[in-house]
Image (cartoon, rainbow, N blue to C red; front, side, top):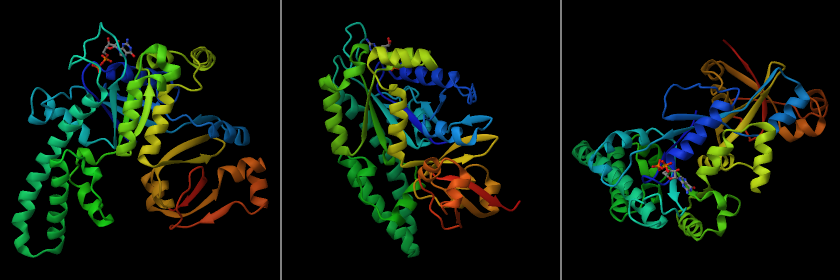
Length: 365
Ligand code: GDP
């Protein structure tokens, strides 16, 4: 599954948010306690289309797709220099697909702020600088090695050195590696270095309970939004405190509580959708009598790769896929009706899977 790592300064509400995530995961029927790692929380990706498909197929069960959040607590000033447990945490961040950066936007005199006052921009810069410094170290080490190999006259090494120089320059200017324009070839090369600032970032602006329904009235949230807009990062205002209360409820109770708060959906659901958008993710479905199920893929994945998300055998032995678009199926009300209209297609290896595709794979074992 794809993972987002939660980072932020101490006392900004990371643990509160992460606990809400694990609680919500534990409440869900399909992924109860499915990880033993206390730092990983698995949540279901909410998707109304699953219900609609279930009405058509009447399966034994519905299985939503899942998304993982990893708690990367302990990232503090000086982490990149290996102070405290910093290094270990940086190693954890390298493994995630995206970063959720929690920023404190709530005022509370009783809760100390590490730098003395609520100041989201300075908080963001502090954390970002640590991540940049960690990448500087990685890039410099790699540059040193690649320069030695330059003598061999390998074109690829020359390209790598040139690219690393550009990234280093950006990092020295306090800019993340993702701000550097790269060709597709360079993008493939840079992946091996696991640079932290290459990962997409979502800022979770943590507001107080009272502001949950009108977070944008909070001036700090506006500051984070402006910063996010400049960086091209997603911003999701959220009240970690409220989320921890919502996470304890289910079904009707949850709906009623959300209504009382004046919210149309939980912040956690918005966070998941934000992460989906950030990572360029799509959902496709399988719909049989056993189960109607959602699967997560990256935009642009071809049919065999998408099949591989279910099982590697499906990818290896892929022959073709029967595909019907979600709209085509639901508008017509049944698989047969869609088929009669010629909306059920046979697609091969080169087919690029679309969001909402309902797929049935044929494969050799
Ligand atoms: P972490 O150090 O970033 O993991 O922060 P915590 O989640 O432990 O939160 C630090 C303190 O801030 C705890 O006492 C939380 O209860 C409190 N806190 C978190 N979010 C809010 C909030 O929205 N409003 C208020 N008043 N307190 C909060």
